[in-house]
Length: 232
Ligand SMILES: [Mg+2]
Ligand SMILES: [Zn+2]
Image 1 (tube, rainbow, N blue to C red):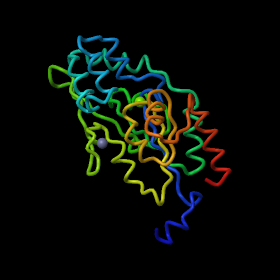
Image 2: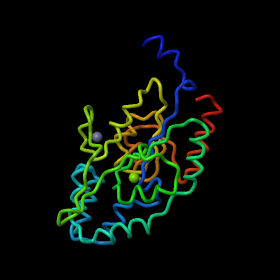
Image 3: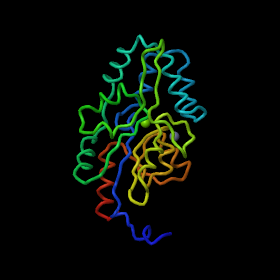
C-alpha cells in the first residue's frame, strides 16, 4: 500500500451516488409493469430467467421488448409514464446531494422513453442519467445499448453499471450504490456502500456483502447524514 492511499481517509474522498431507476427511484419496476400489462405470450419465462441469472440482462430485456410491436409505441410510453410512482424522499436526497457536494448519477437498466420523462421534473443534468435506448422503426420494439459493458465486465449488462462506477477511482471517491435488483448485483460487488431493497438484499446476503436496507430515500439520507457526522 502506498503512503498516499494510507493517508487518504474517507473524509477527504468525494461521495458519488449511483442510483438505480426501476424499483428504486420508482416504486415498481417499469419494464415488468409494461410487459405484464401488455402480456405478450412468453414474457414470464424471460423475466424469470433474467432474475435467476440464467439469461443476461441485455439478452432478456431485448427479448422482452421484441415481444411488443412498434405500432404500440404511444400506448407503451403512456402506460409506463402514467403508472410510475416516484419513491418517497427522492427530492430530499437530490437536495442533500446538491448542498453537500455529493455527485448524483442515475444508473438505470431501464429504457429512455420512460426514464427521461419521469426524471424531467427533477433537477438532474442529462449527462448524469445513464439508461438504455429504444428503436421503434422495426416491426417489433428494439432496445439499443449506448452504455454497454467495457473492458473488465463480461456480464452482458446492457447498461453496464460497473463500467460507469469504475470511472470513479476508489482512492478518490466513496462510491455509493442504491438499488433493488438484478441490474445492481455487479455494481454492489465493487461499490463502497450499498443501499439495498428487494432482490438486492438477498443477493448481498448470499455474497456476504454489507448493505443498508432502505424503503424510502429518507432511510438512505439518515444513514448518509450519520456517516457524514461520524467523519466517514
Ligand atoms: Mg431496479
Ligand atoms: Zn457490464
